[in-house]
Image (cartoon, rainbow, N blue to C red):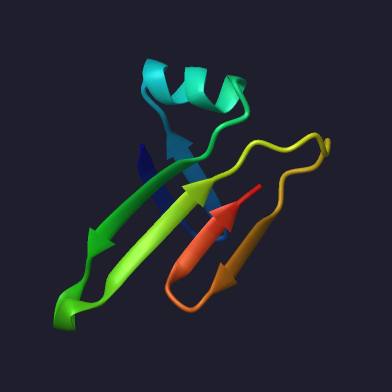
Length: 64
């Protein structure tokens, strides 16, 4: 999974296997090492809600 941030928008690019995981209700997770040893993580969680929302806790971004 790739994360693209531009302005106030987020874009996720998933592989076919990741799309299949989300379709089964599973979670897809990825991490990136930033300067200073900081680990930034981003997660895509399947949900039954019609609206997309994102939450940020520390260095962890979750998209529902």
